[in-house]
Amino acid sequence: MGELSGKVAVVTGGAAGIGAATVERFLAEGARVVIADTDRVGGASLANAHGAEAIFQATDVSDPAQVEQLVAAAVDTFGALDIMVNNAGVPGVMHKSFLQDDLADFHHVMGVNLLGVMLGTRNAGRYMAANNGGSIINVSSVGGVMAGGGVMTYRASKAAAIHFTKSAAIELAEYDIRVNCIAPGNIPTSLLATSAAKMPPEAGERFTRGVREAMKADRPLKREGVPGDVAEVALYFGSDRSCYVTGTVLPVDGGTVAGKVLKKRNFSDKTPAAAHSNGERRPV
Image 1 (spheres, rainbow, N blue to C red):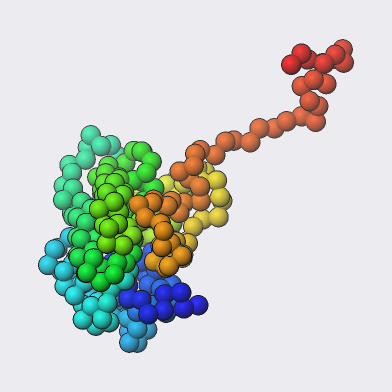
Image 2 (cartoon, rainbow, N blue to C red):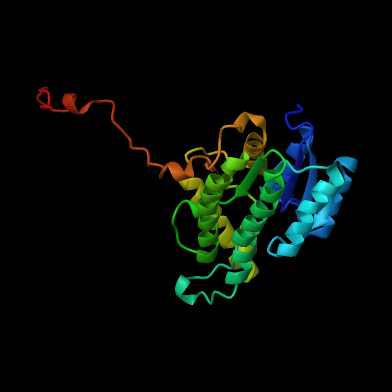
C-alpha cells in the first residue's frame, strides 16, 4: 500500500471500465487523482465517492483547450502532475466489410484515440519537463498490434498511438519523462457493444457474443481479463518500479498476441515406433 503516495495522476476516460479501475487502483495506492471524462454523471459520482482525494474534470480529449484545462486543473488543485494516463477511447462503427465503410466516424475516432493521446502527452509533458519528469501511460489495444478485419479506423488509430508512444519516449527522455503503452485485449468493457450499436438488437448481441467466443478461442490463458488487470500494469508504469522503463508496449491480453492456440491432438498409448504389427521399430 502507498506505492503512489504523494503523487498526482490524471486518468482520461476515467468514469468507467479500464479508466475507473485505474482510478480506484491509484487511489488505493495513495495517489490523488483527476478523473477526466465526457460522462459527467459517472465521473462526478466516482470522484465524490473518494472525497478530497479525487476531482472530476469534464473533458473531451480531442479538444486542445479542454486538455490544457485538464492539466491545469490537476496542478491548481493538487499542486503537481506526476502521472498522465491517456486512456480515453472510442471504438468506431462496425461494418460488414471495409468496402461498405463510409468512414463517417474517421475524424471522431482519430480525434479521441490518437489526437487525444498526443494532446495529453504534450500538455502533461510540458509540465513534467519543467518539474523533474514523470510518467505518461498511453492505452492502446492489441488491435493496434495485430492486423485483423473490421473497425479499420479503430485499428489504425491504436497502431498510430503505439508508434507515437515510442517516438515520444525517445524525445522526452532527456526530461526524465517516461512514456509507455498498454495494449489491452479480451477485456470486457462497453467498447465492443458500442461498435455494434447501429445493428438491430438481436444482431448486435449475436455479434458481441461471437466476437467474445472467437477471442476466447484465440487466447492461451482461458481466464477472461478484467479492467483491474490493466490497472495493475498502469500502476507499475506509474510507480518508481518502472523508473528505467520507457518506450515499451505491454500487451495485457492473456497471451493473444503471442500466437494462435494450437488444437490439441489425440495420441494413442502406443508410440509410432511400437505401432508396427511386426514389432520392428520405425527408422528415425
